[in-house]
Figure 1 (cartoon, helix red, strand yellow):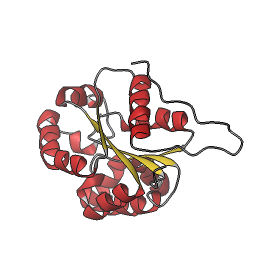
Figure 2 (figure 1 turned 180 degrees about the horizontal axis):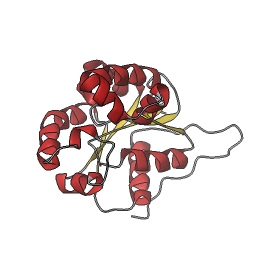
Figure 3 (figure 1 turned 90 degrees about the vertical axis):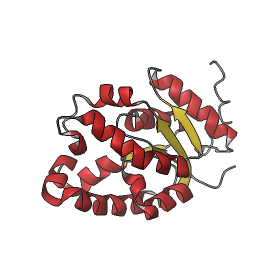
Figure 4 (figure 1 turned 90 degrees about the horizontal axis):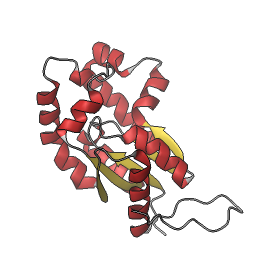
Amino acid sequence: MNSKPNVVLVGPMGSGKTAVGRQLARHLDMEFVDSDSEIERRTGVDITFIFDKEGEQGFRVRECAVIADLSGRENVVLATGGGAVLDPDNRSLLRDSGIVVYLETSLAHQLERTRHSKNRPLLQNRDPASVLQRLMEVRGPLYEEIADIVVTTGNQRIGAMVREIGDRLHEHGFAAPRSPGAGPAPAPATDR
């Protein structure tokens, strides 16, 4: 059994970290936490408001504090914000706290999934494609640096992605926590 008790999802905006994370947590019978949602819960305001009042630097300070707290928990599937990997301490904490799954996706899919979002302050400009491209140039190598598993997201259904991640976690020796008396762990899905 792997000694890392968590699953950590990293990747760019629009890669599906929250949607996949919720279903993966259910699949693994683990708690789901989203670092951006936790920041909003703790502050009582949305991320756009934080960016407006404190700038990206202020948001990143809050993000580091939340990552430090969440990475100390056990038996969670943690979806991180796209920029959480920018901080070296965050990268170290995330890598040490769980199996890191990088949800890799194309620029076209990012644009499709984020085009109607008003809660992504870095994309509130006239050229979100250029912003996303620039962000990936910086963040892509950092995602790869800490990833134990890379899964390419695209048009596949979330359930299929969850099964793929579950299989890959099993290959890495990850065993989801079992409730007392829950019986044997289910076999990994092989119906691909």
